[in-house]
Image 1 (cartoon, rainbow, N blue to C red):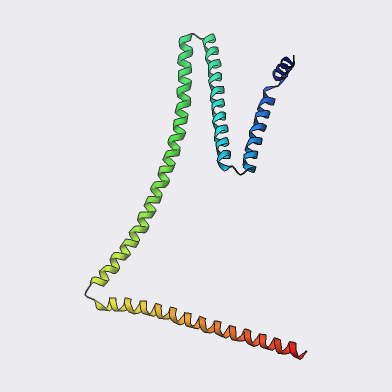
Image 2: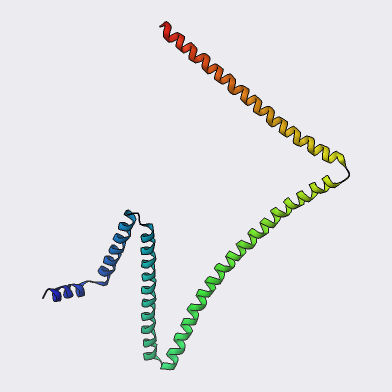
Length: 190
């Protein structure tokens, strides 16, 4: 008797109630796994639910197409209905492939742009390297001397800057010690 009552309750539920309940159960399961920190379980659940939804959608689409073909058979002959269904499927497939082809073409275009930019950057860097190596290999010693002196000057300025920075740090430390001594004297005098 209780089984028949449960069965009657199941039948009285609307499809929206069933979907709502399934969504609630799936959400509760995902939240429970997330709260436990089970990232692998959560990702597995998400993938499982995604597959279930895709399967359900394809099932709905197949049922819709079956009804559509049945209506076409009723209106037209079997042969015309089959031809019409094939044409509709071909049209949908062609639209899907066009979208896919456009996405692939866009990705390919971006890849080509990136490759062109990298060639341009690499080309300018290689050109600069070749120019400098040509200058170094030439018989003109002034170029080599100028480059060596320029590098030495940059290095010397870096050392000089580091020494100035060290001296400033020493002066700051000395000022801090003087301030601390002054504060101690003032504290002891009071």
